[in-house]
Image (cartoon, rainbow, N blue to C red):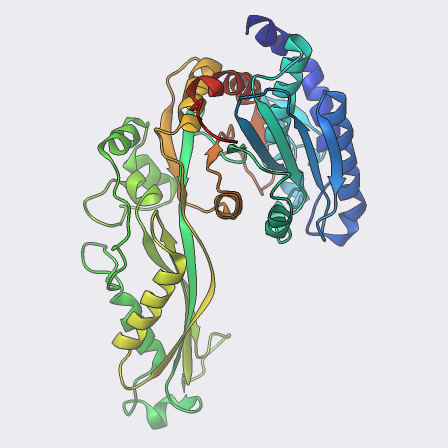
Length: 462
């Protein structure tokens, strides 16, 4: 691999020039005025994929912004990896908070600043440059590669699920790789192997049939706001555990290996609390903060309202009170099952003085790729070679719905081989990608492609 890695080192200036061309296209998927820019970005990627040696490159319609497909399938008997990324970006506003133009790549202190550098054009580009380096120096890839780059991730990927469903044969593979995530921190190569799911609910409590004068009626009825807050307060016990019956029944417990790996990460509760402006942290007893953030389910009140909230005073007893409640889920919890358990629990604990309605707004499933799987093992080996340090494992507290879609529709596990950093300002002014991570990412993806066949079961049918 020395010739490939030397080639990567020799091309760093060109890589920045080319990436800056892509970054200069304001492919903001949420704004109609940027629709021509979306088409321009798709065309740029299509031409670039063809130029580096990928085949069957096509701009494909989805019903929304276009998706680009390309492949290289000349490694018989070797695994096939489906690489996913997106070329759409968040709006640049507020522009006045950027220290350089948002759509002009600018290098400062070893970082490349521009909208889309980390999320996700820069990370897509890492894969393109790894493919290019291997094809130029070896005239072949060690594995088969398929790649899709969509244009609607930042607006919910509304058309991607149907696209995947309609193109199962085209997207048939052994493993998905996504680089739209990050490492634990700079200098700490790490691999994300699990994501939490989500159940999101809305609760409506009704008391009297209209708002009432608090002087004339106060003391004769149960204020719906009071009743709702009492119910919400009861959803956790004094040890921080959720009190919904059956909530933890399907939770996959952390293994000793996982807990030891989390404990090796450079983490400080005190520093974390200070950064958040807190005196102390809170959570389920018996687990570390990282374990609670990544591998334990949670229940949180995201919003609560009712009555009068305008300027000045209005002495009113509200007829209704509302709350939005989200629950982050872990393997093997089901968002639908948790929604039913939650609704049943709320109706059971609601006082007879009010009526309660519980609505499920949306949900998504948790995802995990076992750390002893071939894809994760190959990724860990590649990260160590790419960054020169033994990597650690981590999970992510949030959700990436497409990971669940790939599992559900294609039966594929996903390796989240991300190279961003926690402070990269994704979705905010001064978004950046660390250039050390960028070049290390290219080397890592090259190593991953080279390592994967050695870990992949030779008897696997494709």
